[in-house]
Length: 84
Image 1 (cartoon, rainbow, N blue to C red):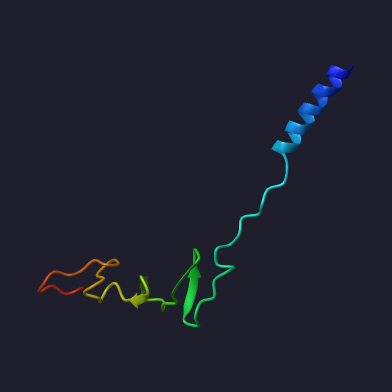
Image 2: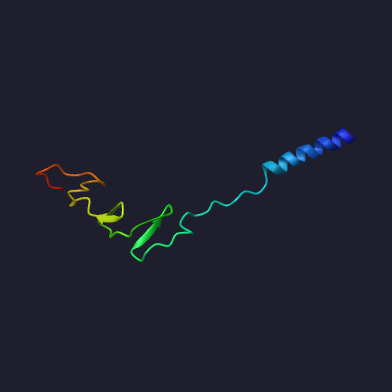
């Protein structure tokens, strides 16, 4: 009887360990305060860009017009080329 009781206690202990409580994932933006012209993204403040712009690092750019960010962030046009 004692062996059965001990086995039940061990199994119950394992079951409780497996089905116990876990911490709720936290939002990385909960502890970040961004400026009025910024948004929090994965714990970092990024520019709050207008609809035609994209945040490239800490600046907003129009990927159709920027020679430094043509079609994508940090995609530079070659000398003599223009971004369209």
